[in-house]
Image (cartoon, rainbow, N blue to C red):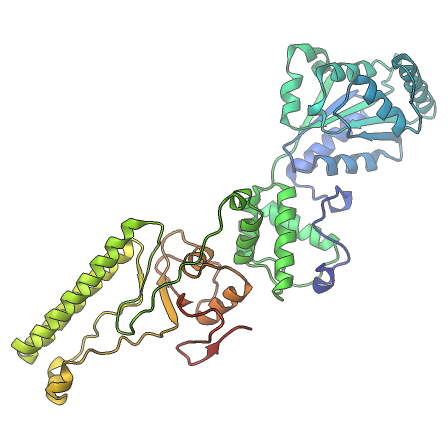
Length: 461
């Protein structure tokens, strides 16, 4: 449990419909007001329609709690039944043992209880959850319950709670009489992005949290997007990310944590076979270091083109050294640099990431005069770190996708390592196309130290 870690008194994202945690968004406020008004006005039948996970049951408990002082309330959720079973469930909820009672006896007993509550000046409210599962015959029996009335008032107020299938079922010709008796149809809508953030803050406050924001703005946006504003899904994402954040000893949930939790609970990811990490072959220090999507063979053309361009550039410089004057060599190197830059940009547009650096323009005439000819033919060092791979972010890519593709694993240790290798990037949650990201070379074991440009060594924590 992470309650002590965050200083909370109770679980803020539980699975029970606790009215204390109910956040009244716009549609929730309107629905609660409409249902309360319909019952107070003795309209007989009211209905609450919403998709799964939007908080129908929690809102119903809030309404019944609000009515409890002036009404006797019963909440039924057993809807896989026939009419006789439903009457038995109702009597059992009222404290009456209905075992062995026939339908007429149960009907008379319900009438007796309703009359007693009316004489006491109390309403009787029956709420039936998951009503979309009720058969047509059972719904018709429920309609007959509304016949318990006097010449002035209804003795029984009935509230039907269900999914959109209930609304479609009520429009059938066989249930026309019941449909006509329902005076109020309330509905719930998913939260928007702002309501999602306020919903999360509300539940944290009820749970007793008083610290700094637990979710980064990027994490809140991703939760709102992936949950589609459905409270039950929001609860699941928040519980999972807070648990992961606690395990990583962090104080705030970021986008990468949300992405990891989403991937863990995504049913599609469970059906996919695990990806085996691709180990890159050992690279020579002076050769270009490439990283590509192994699943897309068409990108091998970019690797071939880049290698061919590199060989052509080296040959051009070599022949220039033998046959041209220093001034012409300097101009040739400048043209080669511009061509190299164009090739790199073209290759980058098709998704190839590379550490290869273009030749650095310099005064070649001066270098040729100072450096002996025996040394001028040696190739310069590329100046790359053997244990670090620099990648360029492509449009629409997330850091999680890059790490999984190039390293084959995505866990707390990998995330910490990437953060240390990229201290100049303020927010890893917000990557832009063309941005450079430094990753540990996949050919280096995960537990071996990696040196950064600054000379710091990172290994396992």
